[in-house]
Image 1 (cartoon, helix red, strand yellow):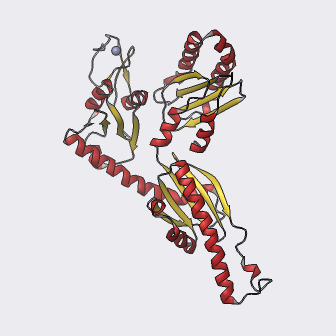
Image 2 (cartoon, helix red, strand yellow; image 1 turned 180 degrees about the horizontal axis):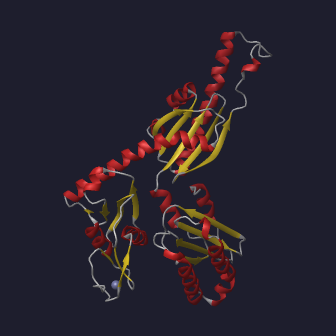
Image 3 (tube, protein in one colour; image 1 turned 120 degrees about the vertical axis):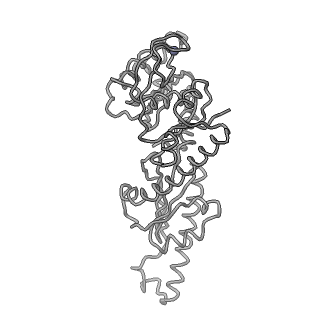
Length: 373
Ligand SMILES: [Zn+2]
């Protein structure tokens, strides 16, 4: 999974005589009928080789070869977007599979080029999950449907039950006080860890799970800024694995996502009604796309509309026209025009938000966009 911490480390890398090849590829099967991204890769590599200085090319020749052969031998694992960062001179190789499309790009430089990855981090909601108990805590992150465990906080000095009446030799009451004291210290550790994790990774939302008691205790200890990020809480055992945690959290995320989707649609409908930098309907969207005005494309998950694409310049339309009004190129039928629109939007630096379901939006055509101007 993509993390800001890891990207920060990558961003610090410098060639010191060596070069980095940063390669981004749209591998969305919808817009790449018959794996035609393979052709794009060959062309991109060829173009890069042609325009790169001979001395530099000598250093990155191996990187380009490795990237090309990676694509050919890893078709099965591809999702929608792929990022490969390579520097044979620095013995560095990193592959990142993305469930969102990216713009096709190769950048050769003395440092890795990671802006597209940072943009994805900024624009696709990430959720932190804190699992907390009296003696330990675990932190997870969820991004684009994937979960990963990050860190574990284990406070050694919380006295366990087995020590009761042992060498602590404490009365029941002072034992409890003693335990409370240590649990308090442990939870303070947890809060500190959580706070630094959230600010370091810029995670916008938080879900807390664990035993009822620990959850409510830690909740009361959180700084307001962190408490404001909580969406919901749940109960779980401390030893639950990542998959079990994800299963517990999924309904919470679903409900929250639904609420956010509805807000997006309400804002889209209101703004477009007032003519405030928003449009609705496929024709308006395609026009705005042609003019490079889209900031965020919004569409229903099951939006299905056929259309035409210009084979030469990529102009998209739902009107039945034989040749492109811009370049006179021949138009071709495409089954799902929204996928082509989404890819074009991404190439213009816009974001794409897919709405799982919304009746008002469906009635309004199921596709729309927030505009830059
Ligand atoms: Zn055209």
